[in-house]
Length: 218
Image 1 (cartoon, rainbow, N blue to C red):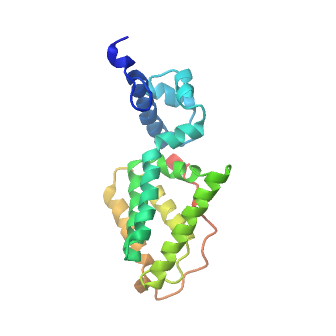
Image 2: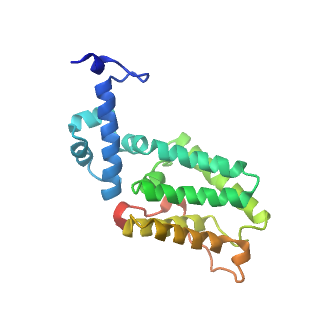
């Protein structure tokens, strides 16, 4: 074994182990984009060119693999929500948050399902994280409404509907960025208070945690 393979990184991984880990994460994102996050772990291992035992040694559960594969995207979402809340213009913050979420849907087609699955209510910490995010999102919506920018009858479930619509478009036309941008512009314009001459029908019962966002639209 060469000297470079024995040198550990700050996380304690040898160079060869670190390369294996990165190959697995790249393969996982590709497989999840094509087949959804319920794709067989063996498929991920085969795409990464490693043995199934190696995959499970690094990521003992599917949940651990999903979290690691999309950790950067999750951090982007958390940061985008914090920046939206900190923006003195609540509409601008709201708009940028939706744009960031849709950009992530375009760039990582496996991410929407991972996002929904990332904070299950199976532990106290996860439930608290989800509740905090939902509370912060509601605060942002109310601020934008109070500023007279977001229509008064906007409901948080409308974000779930918008993301579901955009996800379907991205699955059908994964390389058509123009269509994605145009749909996003339509949605954002429809959310504006000055585009609300008539009241909307009652809101959907959808929430971010219940979105059917499997890859490929299945």
